Image (cartoon, rainbow over all chains, first blue to last red; front, top):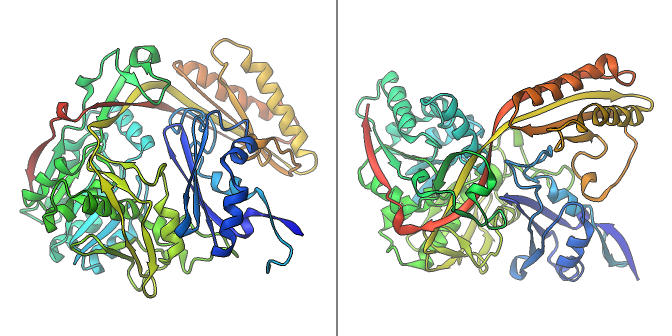
Length: 111
Length: 442
């Protein structure tokens, strides 16, 4: 059996921007959680989660030995920091957007 | 062992931790990195308004705070605070040195990143669906190529106390002292890759010492208010330890290092700079004592043949204005204000790109997936960019008028208009770029 928790409970993240491309790296606090992050946080899932935001493709790079995933989201910043009319024109807050996703963890995983 | 410190990781970075590093860091080099896509655009904007401006606005303050200590300790300064006006910036450094009685201070100004003359109407913008410069339909206000170590190192070889540049690749500011000091070959891609890793980790200042990291209860950072800037101790083979002053706040852990490792990186196996195609995919991160993290196994491949250029275009004027609503039914009143603004403004020609967010409801994340929540503290935030300053002023006026002509209880109007520069990127041949060094003496 599994239970649903926020990614924020088991991972930390940082967002960066280059032009109209955003990247969010996601890191497991506990290496034991990394396999489930890798299984559940697919680029397809990230792309589907934010249809209003991500106009282009999503690529995922895995750093298995560091227990981290790097998501690169193209055409996702309303043109980029010097073009967007949004308040967070860098997309700096996107790390916590991704950390708000749900993940399924085993029931017996220690809290 | 070479000791590099970071005295600024972005344009508006803090001053006090840089002073601490200059005084107590026992550094060989203190590097100030202050250019981003946004702040380079600001540099062009400032230089347009005043030909004597366009460099980092905090340049004089940073030099007043650190130059004397660096001179005393034999620490050399490397910085891109020249932004869009390197020569004017070098003169500011000279002025500060003279005012502080530091006669004999030498400044090497690295020029040649301004490649406006290589950009034409047919130039292709790879980040704008391969449109041409002409198709953007706006005047070009500047074009800057990312210079690398080949441009910076001659400044170090000149013996200058301060090497000041405009647009260079951020990691190159740190890689240059390493190559200069250790005599690394310019095609030693492994070392250049590892040295670029060091630069990449350092160039955002306290983003690796606990800044931009704290998430109370999950990621606690000790004494964040007094967070220190980072120090890199780098060996001849490029292996390095990231650390900080022992009495500074913040922390250096494998987690702070890992978050910074992928910051603004796409493919970790191909991080492009003018110096090397760096490969971070096998990097190892190992805690080696309190606030000491060893980072190794960065690598690299041949450098790219083409260099990236950021082109700034006149973006007209950017305006933003807001009014807040609070208490019972605040969300509905703010939404009504938004709808009124749309009615009064958005249907007029020239206002098509108006954007209105409700801060507290949908300004940051809910714009991504459509969450709607009730809030008792909502700000209507309106933003637009236009070639017409009058149109932007009209927007501000309409938002302010909500105080009497909108829903009940609106308050806290603020509005501002700033000149705007928008940016796109292209690639040019490396051989077309001719960097140069100009010396200034106090």
